[in-house]
Length: 369
Image 1 (tube, rainbow, N blue to C red):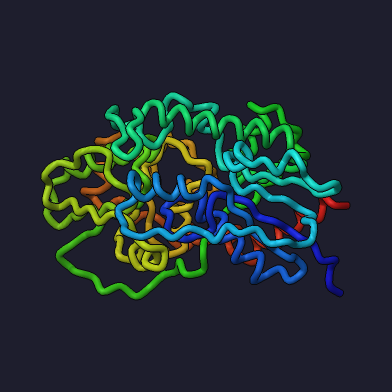
Image 2: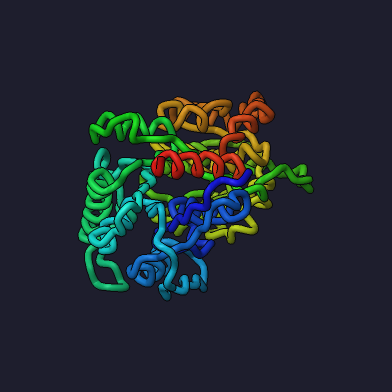
């Protein structure tokens, strides 16, 4: 017996792939999963008017690639949605439709982290540079203040206007309850999706190389400089550090064993993960930590920072380093070989698309009872 049809509208900045940002990829994957695995949902989407600005900034300042298409943002008439689901709080800060929300429509907001509230002095896309932005002539400090303001405003609106909060981890849920004084009954945990393309692949190994991999946006919290310095202190000529992701905001020195490749299209990411002997993700903190779970799905050993504030399910079954010197030692002695990649793989079961679609359906239906 099928359930009652629900109309859900997902709202975010863009649903186009290859932004290189976990916040955007979260929505892309959720949209695909709901359409594929939940036939009792009618899912539509909407992007906010700031999409073109976002894609322009993202392309010119953070990503090394040539083309990033935008979503067709023409609004179509459709049945009144039962659920408006904002996939990240900043969207709520610049969306006027909340003021004319249809009666009986419920609002859900996903919160990934509270960085803009708890760690405001340390976050921001342009923290590493103090020059004026060449694209629009504003200082990076001013751009940071704008981004922080929009994020903070979005979180406040999420608290005020949402009927339910979806948190991407138990860690984020605990912070929302503790710092924003939200009732526990108003918060659920539903993990982000790790796409099924992330899986173990046959490797054509070069016996003369031991590949250490890192993929990130290189924002402050990623702590990539610690990895680079620790690697530079290693002596083994077979070691090679491969860096992928956003533009590098700092100098990586002249060690010929360090290779920077820049942005990777989504379809290439599983292959890249499988090219690593070990994946190092030394973040100070993460709302979730999708790259770690992607590596676990590929059964690649993972190294994380022991003091890093990561969700338990993400950090578990990883090799943890205490400081830069300890990380150098792990890399030199191949300490990652102690990791149980099969146990680590089991940590990712709740990120599978079918499971996440089911959990999200439960959140929507509970609101409409």
